[in-house]
Image (cartoon, rainbow, N blue to C red; front, top):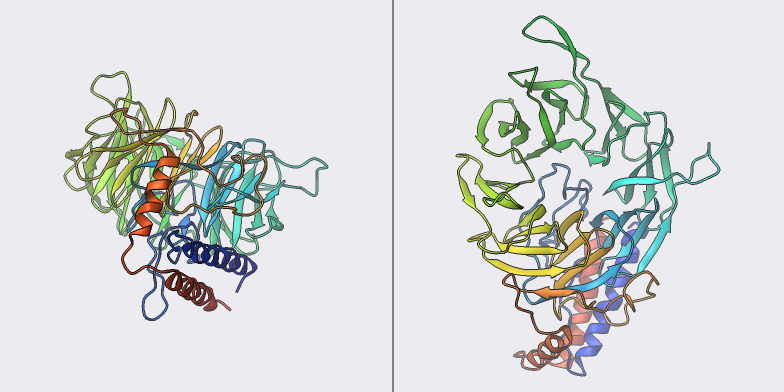
Length: 499
């Protein structure tokens, strides 16, 4: 069992026992919880049936900028918070983040890396990126990636380009320098490798030690007119799925063998002079997708054969049957999110109400969550586009993620949004002075339904939740304590397989 796993067991065992003891005075005993506080379960053979997505090394959460190594922005098998919702905690550092196994890893705007408890928002550790060749710390940049009990972050300047930190302590594991000063903004981790574009070259580094395994550079291409033209890799994150790396150059989508770097197939634009690829590639479930010449093109991931096109110039989320894109609304004055059938290209979904301008989108089984350009985040039902809830965070979001029953929003500050009265932890550890008051209380950020009507206050809702708890059939203080013991055993079994 790793040190991080031991810490997770001890932390959540304590929370479960506290909830069990609280039940003796009339509060509801905590369910067996996963690392982010969402309910989970196990099969008879001890395998977890939690709803969280699995990362490259089997840990659970939102492990990279778009949730997974394929950049899908989609969390299958998961259902996020339901109304009424509010901000469970806030950290006043802005930046981009990942959420894995109960910890939020934030690359803050001040260049430091922060590990924050996902349940109560308390600070676990804070780390600067030191470099042997410099007296001053190096400024971390862009979103991190998390796998193999390691946080991978890029940094500004010539060196180091990539730094690996221990997830439990923030201590340095390894650094790799000399890749180039123009690194991409987010590493991708899969299959024991870290993939990073630096100075127009794609590098594959060993995830455990940082050694270079292979590198790829497109070089020049001979076009139809017989001219040699340069074709350079874009700096955005690559996508990895099914043992294949998908990278975009200006004019091509390139599929490479993840283990060797050998080229498997490519697809290029027809009009070299005026057309390009744009955005970042997405890959999952045997398909790859990219914006080619202003249209989303979906490919067979194995052969590169074109399967369908979707008439939109934006590609934000790829689910099992849809493409979601942030597009211009019909009024032309704002952005909205649109869902298209990935086989036919037909428009099949849009929000049924709400007039805010959309900046980004992520999706789980039940809902589409959108960052609002003005401020905050909103949720819409995947079935009919019905507005479910909206929270005004007072800041424009740069990133939205959904993990278990929590939506995280990053902008000038970081927010965790949950259903009122659920997954709350009273007295949850040492709070950070930069977190909300005591590290676990809901803030007063606005919580409204999509039509603008205000929901009941958090305090009133919490009171109602407690009253409902008293009426729970078959619940007694004795069963709550027994449940705490069972949860302890579950936590022990969950991590015991790695000892």
